[in-house]
Length: 312
Ligand code: NAD
Ligand code: UDP
Image (cartoon, rainbow, N blue to C red; front, side):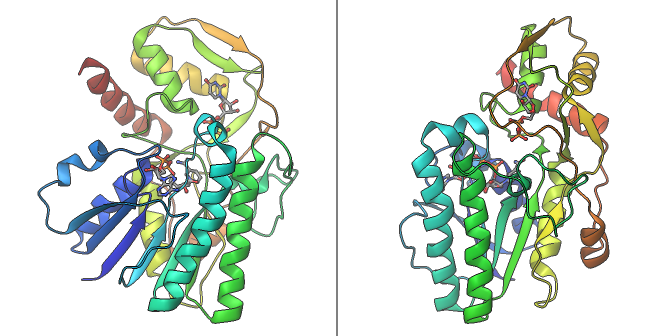
């Protein structure tokens, strides 16, 4: 049994991570300021003595004693992270500095939830970890992309300078139950639109691609990375390499839901990456990890979740 800190633990990925860690018998301290997350995501664990909730903003120092830190705190959807871009950069950068400082003081291993956004609008396809990316430093997505890039820099500097045990995970688009219904991310948006019979909002011509990983697979990769030998620090891509256009995704969702929603074409947001697919050779070899859940199966689970949520 270990004592683990999960920052951003009340969010979509964080709450699934808390579930997984508690299931295997760890004690979890969840730290969150509830900016995009909610206590409801952890409501089912309210009587579980292994979980402790703490309201705290990671841009301020934190003094706790734990064995390991999963640093997930950061809004992740474009509409959320662009709402207060300065706070987004602060959360990534000051948050990383505070959590790395904590890890150094208490000698804890620390994992960073980084992102495929560090590759920007990629010129190398599929994306390998050695690719340095193509990121606009001054656009509307930059607060997130550059904040996450700077956090990676900090992780590697603490590793070189202070021999901290770090793990850097580049997460590609992940979906599943407990996504926020109004956060604008494409999977939750299309499902909610289809269930309500509202038009499906396709940005641009819908030929841009993404590769969608089901949340259970992603959490499996995250736990494997944290538990990997100290020498393996990453960065490592974790995502599902099956690539789809947004038009293909819309068709799948419409079919699954059995909806007659029309497609509505809207302008493509600035700096929206044209294509994205992870090369997961490193995760396969170093973590013995690969996704198991197909998009059809994962979407079916997610539709069931949103159907219940909308009914309630
Ligand atoms: P989310 O918005 O559901 O969760 C983020 C959590 O962090 C929320 O509970 C929020 O309240 C909390 N938070 C935000 N700012 C904070 C602060 N200053 N102090 C404390 N808590 C704060 O998003 P998610 O999808 O669960 O993403 C979790 C992490 O994974 C993020 O770091 C995100 O960048 C990364 N990531 C996610 C995806 C994805 O597809 N879901 C892809 C790449 C990277
Ligand atoms: N997208 C879309 N309609 C929507 C929301 C998103 O066509 O209602 C597109 C968006 O332009 C992008 C893709 O879906 O090309 C994924 O968007 P999301 O915000 O989920 O993730 P990210 O762009 O950060 O990968």
